[in-house]
Length: 252
Image (cartoon, one colour):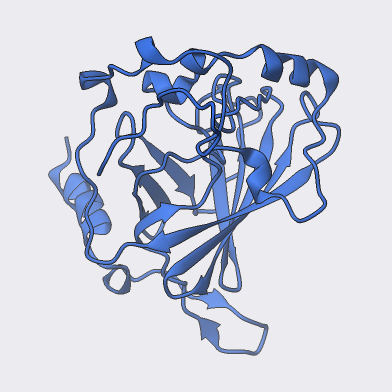
């Protein structure tokens, strides 16, 4: 192992953004260079938890196809991958904090929940592979549009659910996430979902995350003491539903 390479990688993750010499973004042909926005920190929220429809604009509906709706109606709460300590995928997020880490070539999302999982977003200009292996978080490439981080992801598997209700998707899923700071403490996430295998047309959902200054991620190993699944009964429901069975939410 080349010690210098390992040290450089550790330094890139641990140094604050201002010390990493990130490249500036040109604002125009003759204009001044714009500094790369800093989205780093611990956040809470930013994706669907109970119901994907909560992120729709007023009057909009989820354009689910008949076959996907049959899958949705047949699902049982005990089969929710998130309840079984598996990753939540995109754009779903667990109700626990997560961290954004920025480096010159990557952005990482570190999740406290479930298996201490992570996403990596390539910021080095590469393209998607022609035939990516299907994975829980897919293959993500990103770029900046002014102060907005745009994340384009393909190559998903079809295993995760979009929410507690069990909205499905296929391996044709393609997401485009747009992260921007509504204000210092509020991160806006606008997600376009395009999956012709499960939905009649692309649609957009919007969620917000709140900054948790001074917080650190806790060690949470879901597999270590996951006692809830045996008690989960019935079809999937969202938090707040009067008939919701015992779920996997824990106190923090």
